[in-house]
Structure formats: C-alpha cells, structure tokens
Length: 234
Image (tube, rainbow, N blue to C red; front, side):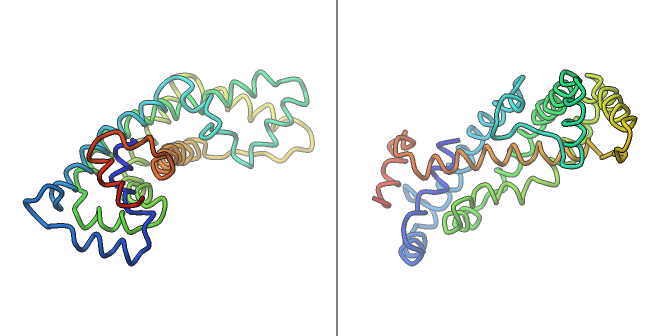
C-alpha cells in the first residue's frame, strides 16, 4: 500500500497554488513522467497495495485482535453484553463477539476483485483530483467507487458465515437469555447488516492508516521514482 499511496499523496504537502501549477505542467503523453505513465503506475501500485492490505484482515483474528477495527456490539446490544457478564455468562458474551469478527474476516476476502476493478478505472483526471484532495483523498476515492459493491459482496458472505459457525444460534441464545431477564426491554437488531457495515469501516480504516503513513514516513520512498517525485515536496 505504501507504493500506492505514495503516488497518490506525492504533492499533498505543497500549497494548493503550487500544487496546481505542478500538476498543470505535467506532460500529457509520451514523456518519462507523463499522464499515462502516472495513471498506469498508480493503478499498478494500488493493485499490489490493496491486495496486501486486505489480506491482513482476511486472516484469523484479522479483525478480532486488531483494536483499530475490532467489531464490538452495536449500542442496542451493549446492555446485553453487560447484563450477561453481570450474571456470570461472560464466556457466552465473548463467544458472541468472536463470531461477529469471524464473519467479517470471511467477508473481506471478497474485497480484492472489487478494489481491483475500481483501480482499473482510475484516469489521469481521477489521479489529479486525488493529488489535489484532502489528506484521505485516496481512501475517499476508493470508498465512493467500491462501497455499494462491497456491501453487496459482504452481506451474503457474512450471513452464510453466521450460519456456518453457528453465530445465528449463538446470538439467538444470547438475546433469548437477555430477553428472559426480568425488567429488560427485548432487543432484536439486524446483526448481518451491522457486521457488514462494520467490516466495510474496518477495510477503509486500514487503507486510511496506510495513506497517513505514506504522508508522514519518509522511508516509504522505496524506489528511485518515488524519491524523485517526493523530492518536489522537500
């Protein structure tokens, strides 16, 4: 991902006026660092970076043991978790959390081809907009281009994962036990939609973290081209 975001963020530290001037002066075709070359390099770097980044979340505990993206209970079920722990059912509550994160880990494997398709569509105009954009412009670009498709990919996988590991039964037991406690208000949230949204949030969070690293970490300039281009900001 470092190579990917390096190309995207190369001019971000220059003032807007200076940045626009630099971009406008880029040759449009046929030169060493022309528009075609920049767009192609950006697509290739993102292909590699996204694949590596997404793979971290698909591994076991990719979500569950990563505090930046770990899925916790939705607000309306946090009282369920607390009540179960208060009455000595902490193990059941822990298992409920784990299966939510396992479902997300299963689903994120569907992200790579969606991201690759989005990256293929990047034009020089897209690249220029990203270069001139906010600190998370690359993440925003991918979010706009992929969120709907990723939701549609993730949701059925998460539903199937719930069934595979018995999460549907675990949560039925959890909620049934909670609802049987006197003076509690019954709850029945759509956990498949909730976990789908949280999985999406986790994917974009990790991409944004890599984007920030490229902005602030000089060691990210790992090739001659990156060093030459980043020298413009020094």
